[in-house]
Length: 636
Image 1 (tube, rainbow, N blue to C red):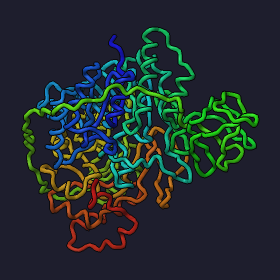
Image 2 (cartoon, rainbow, N blue to C red; image 1 turned 90 degrees about the horizontal axis):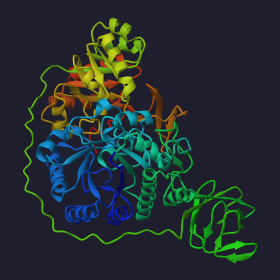
Image 3 (tube, rainbow, N blue to C red; image 1 turned 120 degrees about the vertical axis):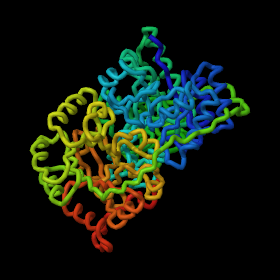
Image 4 (cartoon, rainbow, N blue to C red; image 1 turned 90 degrees about the vertical axis):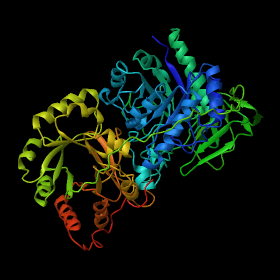
């Protein structure tokens, strides 16, 4: 069996050196565009050649992240970035948009492709042809990690920050904050306060103890998150994880407490085993670094849980804030000392903190790391490359408009049908699917499917679809596509169709185009045989984490509704999308398919949009109050 790979993040040159010289077998890093950590320092075509040579001389592989969604106007530049990586001799690129695979393989046949966790792969049926490695969704149970790893080369995150939402399915930062995680600019809404608590703030992943299980499960690469972290973090995590990977192969695996403490000092928001091994990953206190818990103040004194030295950094957690400073004096029994130990009762500056306020050590004066030699610059030699845009057939739909309505109950399905909807999307997991299908008098009956499907659920869902025998299927999980070939298939916006290449890739299906695109970007598509969302609830997040609160209220008094859908927590936007008269502009550019998603009042709004599309002058001023136009004018 090939030894498992340890893969470290490199957000800048010092972090790269820290990773390479402290145990990394491979590093992943971004160029200055098209990567999911746009705010990191990153790399460019002037230094990437030197980086690759530096790493390869030390037997460390280099993976370039091209893991965001790409607009039509950016495609040539995206392939230029791929050519820079290819020319520099990188070992693989990491991508989100798997529709690019055929073109990437055609233009760069020797370049390996790793499918990013942003592609949200949580079943073996979702792994597309042409992928050399798949980075699995972080929400996968261990048994599913094991199952997929028996069929494909897999990479999983073992350490670092976790997202509340399934990666690649989060629109919260985009829709509510105008900064898209799918475009590398996540504003981290999960770290913000809701209902006066940090209800979405996740703990940090630490699977150090699970290394033997993961290796035995057949995982090929253990990946550390943290391209926004500092060199100390990178070096510490690299050294300690490498130590225990080697210990496992040498049959001497036993975790030492001091190493866990070092990892905590480097960075932690409390540690969790993640969804692979547990059901809850939330710490709703403060979304910031903890460090190592040292104890609580009692009458101005502190009984130490761990050693403390002059020069160490500490954070004191009061009720309202965290007070951070560098320790410059320690007293024990009235005497000044330079170092105190576990069990000692000491006095330090409380900064006004009171009894029971917790103290954490946030940095250690003893922390050291090796950066090794500097990276020498090499003159870039970019291979000649001419990108030929694939021949996309222009298509403007000249048919009459059609309205496709997703509804959630028999009552609403009947209302939508009576109002003249052309398609009804109805949840395949509802018990009354067969009954509702029979009640449809006008609309075609499509079954909508879950966004999250693991291997063990796939065939059961496919069998139920065949049993109901609908007119078509709204597919929300790409793994299901192989099971529904005999049906008319529409694709949910969870597929993130973002450009002409995506639409062409799914030429046998009709996708709901990404709601992150604005009107002008939609107009730029050559083939307009797709559906646009014009009204209803936009799902901002899908999560395995359960929430008790029925809604989340942020500092701006926006109310985000929470619901459970197919055992997944969904967070909906604070305002429903309502384009009203603006939707008519889509008719002018050859788009004829329109999507609404409503739990109630579906009949009312279907009639409204039918009138808008057929009338010369529709008065919508009163109707549109309280609605959002989403990204129609702004985009991301």
